[in-house]
Length: 179
Image 1 (cartoon, helix red, strand yellow):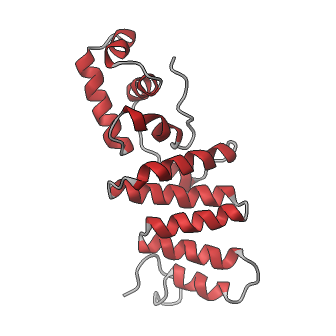
Image 2 (image 1 turned 60 degrees about the vertical axis):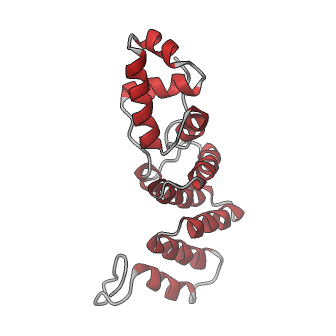
């Protein structure tokens, strides 16, 4: 049985397989790389996705590199891998070079924080203590700690030290100011 989306040729070949076949018939570096990207996505391999992202970056295809890295971050986060932090840092750097371009693939991996969670996360990322955050937002310190635990879970981080990079890696956000 084929894994992944199927083509219109009776469903026997996956899209990744079809891309691989087509890449052999088309000149240039991009077709085989697109086929590798599809195979890496179907195989659910963050390592392969990061390797594809490196190759896109070498060709100066920054948006493609960011998309592959975003996919890797999603998978690493699901696996609760320590490598997710490094991948998030890579993604933040790539997003910084993408200007304002935000594709559906980049948005798909973005964790959804409530407005209050964003406020707490930004303040904590800028070094504010839970007590200082509580005073500024008119909350109890316990409520701030509860918000932080939900934020950490959503972003796949274990504490404040990783928070800034995690916020920067969310498409459409740069960590924001502490206001």
